[in-house]
Length: 437
Image 1: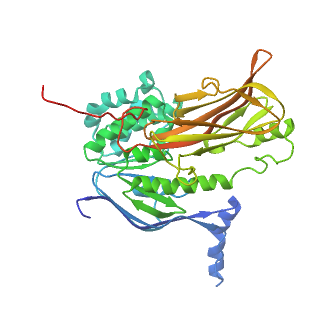
Image 2 (image 1 turned 90 degrees about the vertical axis):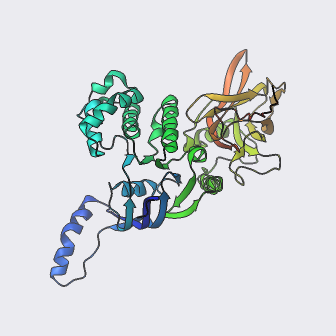
Image 3 (image 1 turned 30 degrees about the horizontal axis):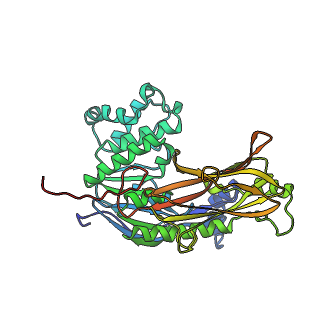
């Protein structure tokens, strides 16, 4: 393999045998042999699931490549084959360089060993001597930040502590290839920040990075190239990362539309309180674990997002930082309600609001009548590239007490892109000038 190539994947396929019951597995083990003895054509007692089909690509040294795709597309199966923890059904994989892989949570850890013992065990698996691991141990311990738990059995760890220690080992052993499969989503925001800073450092050193994540914001931030996998096949492989993300997001939005629960849109006839309570209970965005509550005397039925040219997220899923955005709310009410407050906020996916406002602060009074009403918020959002969540709430003052009518937290996800790399949440690029002193 060329010295410039770190990973070569050639026509890789993976087929799993799916059994309907343990009895069928036993039949498959015994009966085909008996059937052959009697000259019969052996019968199959399983169905085949093709997780990967004819997948091919190469990764050059020093590249950072992101792989995206919906659940079940075959991403994790592909990474396991590249790492050697799963055998392919067909094709070849060639890897040149030491791989550090963070795949399934706690993979390679012995639950009965302490954190310290598992650090040295993982070092041996990566081909490092005990003396080398002793020299690196303090760095790994500091990076993991789990304190006295380093000397406690791994089986007592929380999921966050698992991934802290696992990433610390993999990132601190000078890998030539780093493979990360969604594991960083377990850590808290501070740890995620530290992990991505370390990945940036490894990237500057020329380490090849292959990452699988559902956060296309991270792909936009870090990847030089994007591979989209769908149905076990590579559908896109491009250095135009933004174009790949747009194609993927459009597909995801279309899929979410197909899963909209029946009855989530109210009929045009008179709206009553029972209908509103039923819609509030069943119309929930499960993709982002929406929590919805309130008295439901009125509800936020829908929210649409528009650009100045009228295009929607379904047409162009990624917003550009600083462009004007219009949020159109459809509110359904079963009665007259005065002193209504409609508010919204935007937060990072890891938590922490970055912007919020409501009609009260904007000086716009809302009184609801039975039926539907449209309310629009228009705002310019100079937000840096990344994934965000939109939270919405509808409330009123009822006999001097605040009443929650319909809280949707979060209601929808948003993705922003900025034309140049920024630090922090706000996209506010400086203009630099100078003159002789």
